[in-house]
Every structure is written in structure tokens, then in C-alpha cells.
Image (cartoon, rainbow, N blue to C red):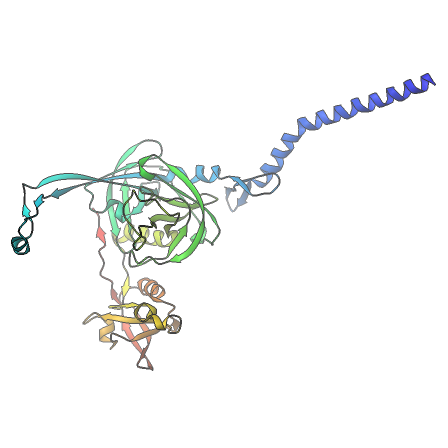
Length: 402
């Protein structure tokens, strides 16, 4: 009986030791196995090049890091310091109301020069030094300095600036500069993860994360708008910086932020707190402006010689019921005037395609080359008719560089 008990205890002891040994071996192998599984899903291979996907957790809960996207995009994002000299005059208010009404304020001393500073960001598009930024970052600047990601400072010159899209192209001297990867077709969808990269408040290169909140936003800040809206934090100094997707590919140029000031909701005061609503110019628009400015020193757009608006903006009662756009003003002697279009006419179709709204027509109009003929379907006092006109070049505030 004693021998039987001893044998049983010996068997149990050996089984426990074997189990502990197996558990020890598995504990050593598990990290390597997890790393292998993680590595097999962390990269996706496309034609000719490797695109690194966000790192995901082993249980598939979602991305846990976008460090590879930042590593890919951040070197091509630069800081821009623009300086300009302005003339300041001092005035004093005349206390006597009659004199003040007749002569206004009285000069209180000689004028003096003052240096103003503007802070922004930019994106390097070519290895030989073409940089895209916002026009409002460099507008009127006498001296523009570009701080590269490796710490070098380069003097920049303006190749051209387009106020209609608030974009500008700079050129710095250099070779083999890090360039941004551009997303195929630049398409984004609501809910996509995006990263904003720039130099907010001059604190240094900063990355913020959010999602695409909406597309096709119109803010009436410039003539051509099709903004991407995001909740990724965008602040003073981010203007002109990159909005990239989860793979580090450029999808937009950060441009504006909504601030609740108690009035119309917009403010240029950098000290106001942002409300988590930022806007970026789609990369397709930015790239088209860049290419035209590099080729021509300016952006060339077709124009009908008329200004127009959505019917709902003129008559709220027609919102959602009237198609097309309403003509507000016709340039005397311009293409629309020559074709017989009048203020108050409704433009319904362009070359057989329905006109969705003023933003749609403005975009189609701009894409047509000056000198090209186009056919418009017009509605006037309940009767429709067609006219053909030849587009002219749209007059702009485009500034050619040197």
C-alpha cells in the first residue's frame, strides 16, 4: 500500500514539473510570436514601393500608433517666418466735434517704420525646393525665412501667390530635400483619421490627430472653396502645414480655424480658443495651383464675365426648390454681356450638365481655358433658352513672384 501511494505521488510530481516546463517555454516564445503576427499586418505592399500601415493591437481593436505616418510626412513640413516693414502714423483725436468732423484726426508726430512678423508652416513638394503655403502667411512680406526639419534656415522667394485660393508657392535653394507623399487622387471620406502637422504658436513642429468631420465646406473666405473640415487641432502657426492621412500621405493644406467669438464665429485673433473645427484646402486644388504657378507664375482661369450666387442666398424662400445659380452682376462688354445674359437670369446647365450650385459652376468655369466656347442654358421669367459664349481670363489678385 505504501509503495502504491509513493508511486502515485511520484507520478503527480513529474506531471506538475512537466507542466511548469511547458509553461516556461511558452512564456519565452509568446512575445516573438506576437511580434511576428503584428509585423505581418503592419505593412502593405503596393506597386513598386512599401506603404507602412498604422500599427494595430494584436487583438484587432484598432490602430495604436501613427508614428510611421509621422516619420514619413514630418520631414517635408517646414516652418515659415515672414517679416515686413510697415509705416505707422500716430494721430490724436480732436476734442472739438465740429473740428473733428471737418478735419478728422490730427497727426501727433512723424511716421515711423515698424517690423511685423508672421508665423506659418509650409510643405516641400519637390526635392529642388518648391514649397507650398498659404498666401496670408507671406502676403506683403519683405523677408521670408524657411526653417527645415534638419535645423537649416533657407531664404525663400515668392514664385507666385493666388488670393482666390489663399495659396502661395515659394522657392528655396537646395537639393535632395525631403518631399511630401501625395495621396492618390487626394480622396478623403468623413470618418477618415487625419494628422495635422505644423508649427503652432512657434513652439516647434507639432502633430495633432482627428478625423475628417465633413467635406465640401464653404466659408466665403475666398473665391474658390471646397474645404475639408477636421477636428484635428489647428492653431495659429499651423496655416500652410500638412493634413495627412494615416499612411502619411498629403490630403490637404491647413488653412483656417473656426473660433466662437460670440459674433459671426470667425476671428483672426490668435489668442481666441479654437472650437475644434479646422479647415484644409484639398490636395487636388493645392496641387493644381502649385503646377500653374510654377508653369506660368500665376493661375489662369476661365470666366464668363459675370458674378452669381445660389438662389437661396438671394431669396431664402427658394432654398431647395430652385436649381442652378442666379446672376447678380454682368461685366459690360464681357462674354456673358455679349451673349445677352442679364442680371437676375438663372443659369441651369453648362455644356449640357446640370449646375448644382455656385461652387460647382465656379469650379467648372475656372477649369475651362480662356478663349474656349461654352454653352449655357438660361432661365428668364419662366422661359428657358441657350446661349453660347467665349470665356475670357478671370481677373484676379494673383501676384507673380521674381
